Image (cartoon, rainbow, N blue to C red; front, side):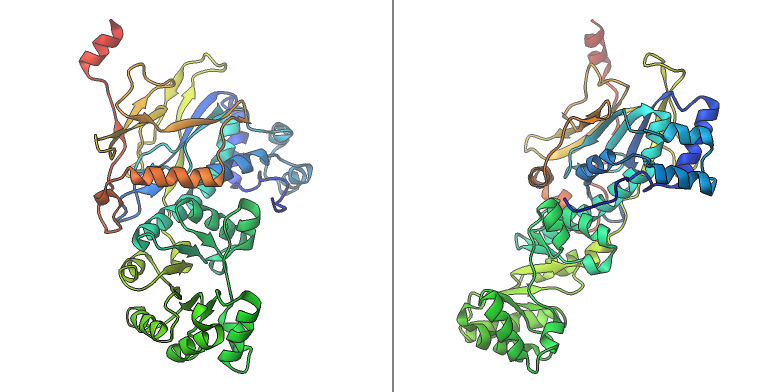
Length: 445
């Protein structure tokens, strides 16, 4: 693990402390509460999303502590009164967190994270959880579409130079969960074990008197199996220089610019003519899933993706209070609550999500049952939520390879029409389920 700040408690917005301060005054802070993370819709044209970030949530929860310097700063800045600061001394989350597994497919209204605890402790987690879920799931959802478009060809994440340095690490992790094969980011390799790839840049070529001289230096230090960047000057001559430098054992070439639909077939013919029939052609440079889809039908052997992955549309996850106790104590009855404002309504009460599959194993429905406990007569399908945290302690965790493997399985349970990158409506929309009368009678009998 690389060095990170000792506390994640300030990765939040000021109004979270305003919520706590007012709740301490009114007496609501100690009441049991349920918050849910969900998206009201998918980005336009998307048929599914990929939930990602549970592992990072567990990491950040361990560091969610208010330090003495932070508390002194809050006092000096006039942000929190004395009572609130006392509450924050030794503050740690002691509730429960339920969530979909990392790499799971989600749809509109899927309750991907459920937080249960006192209102005062649970309300503080909103900004942190949303920043992780929106960034990681946004990256994973875009990456999954690119993996589909690549048709089995490897895809490398190369977006570090297009975002914040810590966001780059999280992006590499999320893309790997969604099926990317490697990243260019060393910190992601060091911190999370994501495979790392990279050779040389245009600057390396420009630093030498000739392109051939640069290629020979790269081959001398990285071996003939390296990938040479051939578009610094003239691509056709670059390919000839690449084969001249590495010989027929050349590992591959990378083309980062130009009309790829024209250049790639030319490159393949030229490599074959020069005897480098095993050399790979890697395409990079502003690729999205649609460009990858076109190129994967030709001679391209792999892709590098950066800005179009980093510039993904946000999933739009929100963190909403859905139930609050009518008094203190574990046995106090819970009252469902929901917003009624136009365009931002939601269903009150804690939801339990079940995904139903057809005989072929493809998802056909996502059912939501409301209640503080799972229904005695559950909807058809598999329960999607798992308890990751209880009493503030992490109960369930899975490593990155497990998350990656789980995502591959979950994606395989979508039909071809559901997983397509072509624009369309969401494949499913999570909806309220109510048992049939016969089922109710059987339950009561």
